[in-house]
Image (cartoon, rainbow over all chains, first blue to last red; front, top):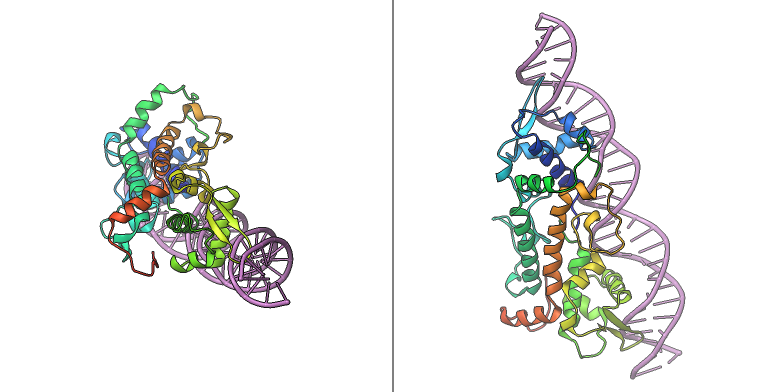
Length: 151
Length: 151
DNA sequence: AAGCAATCCTAGTGAATTACTAGGGATTAA
DNA sequence: TTAATCCCTAGTAATTCACTAGGATTGCTT
């Protein structure tokens, strides 16, 4: 029940873009640097986020990536769903409309358990936006002047 | 963010033992049969559950496994923690007392997010017991007369 | 027009994990 | 003594993870 690096790094990257929302396109090289992530790997993740409509890209020199929407309307759930797949601890209760469920679903009590787990996970992730996280960040102890982050 | 087969099969097996609580030791062969799981694989999972004190074993002919405690005091969280490890979407917020956290934890807002997710997951899993699941099972549509389950 | 900064896309890869299988040893009721 | 059962370890094919590499394309700047 762990996130992969895709979800973790992707959340880091989206938060980095949120912090600089309004500045125009941010080159991935900068995000990779401040977040200490591999640029080439990050590129793949951000590419998925772009295809999903969460970020926009500007090609060419002076280009980069920027959030496609305001930080207040992008939730953690949006990001996690793109990078980790639909939310749910098992395939048969995943939160996608066209998911095939097993035939004995009506009599399957484990399914109820997994559904409740899914719902509580989705509830948390869908209720927290990038703007929320930035607001909370201000309350935490200040970060280094460079803005660089390790973990 | 998916469970592995260990968690899923383990939950199935524990529920199977719960249904027959009070009958004395149940051989694993029977559990494997009714739950359509590999006996050899199940053996490994149940072995972990035994070492964790959730089931007891009786060796020799007429032996088998039985719940070490009443179904009402064994939670889904107990089972999942044994088979999937401590609950938490990332290592640094896992619900173990002696977990090492990263150095920039005080300024890490992602960490707050992951903590909330962990708490909501743990809350659900720790609040549902095997007895609860059996009670809900009665309300669902009846299962086949053999008691065999597919999913 | 040339150069360069940047995104875009695909393929490859070593390491780790998963989901088992196999096989033998130990214990105990019948 | 036999058979049923748990106990333990090792091996393994397949998959997934976490990247790296490299080239194509785009478009600002000079």
